[in-house]
Length: 122
Image (cartoon, rainbow, N blue to C red; front, side, top):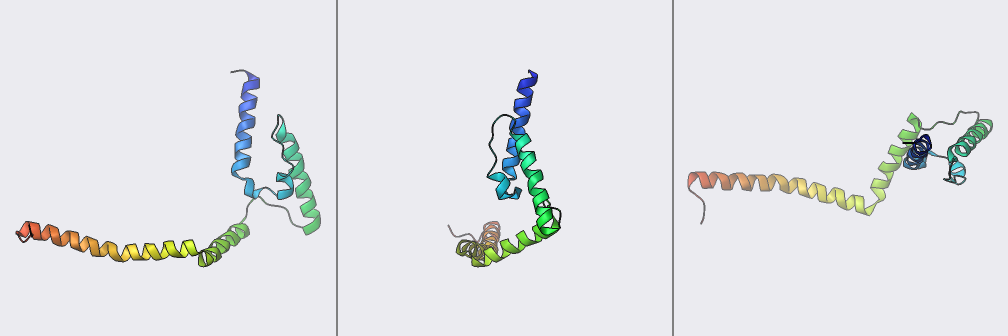
């Protein structure tokens, strides 16, 4: 494999990682991304500019992910679950399934017992 081919594959690998983590990339940086040869150089420049601008406007260092972001996301998911009719239906169905799982296990065990004891209805 030539060095140029290796570079192209590394660039593609970087692109996949960026796309997998796109939700963490600031919108103003993501809107500027053009995936062409050498795109990482422009991306890095745009991220550095964003981080500098963020620090100047907030007095805080921009972070890719932190505990506060994770906690906010968990709160968001919990709030959405209480409002989403599909999630409510799923949870209701799961609770229903759990109730009847024990019922069907008891029936299965009873039938097995009846067959062993010769009490099965033919």
